[in-house]
Amino acid sequence: MGPYNHPAWCARGHRCNLGEHRATPAVMQVDGVGKVLVTRVLGANGRERLEVTGSAYLHTTGQAATKQLDRTLRGFAHVMASAAAQ
Image (cartoon, rainbow, N blue to C red):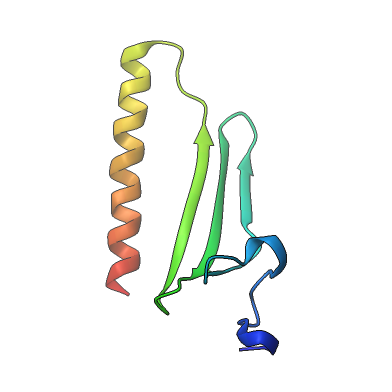
């Protein structure tokens, strides 16, 4: 922890509020696909977590877009399970 009990990675300022500490988000952008932001957070309860925010373009037809959503959710569930196992 640094001055004022901020972790070294904390971005401070307006990002750090409500008893939480937040890093500057890391951004991954893939042209024509979308982007994902991940942020390291130390909660008021003392537990660290990773926040994920993102957006992706969907197919122009409803059925294909639904398949994209399903695959994305299953892929994300796999990533979360892998992270929890470490």
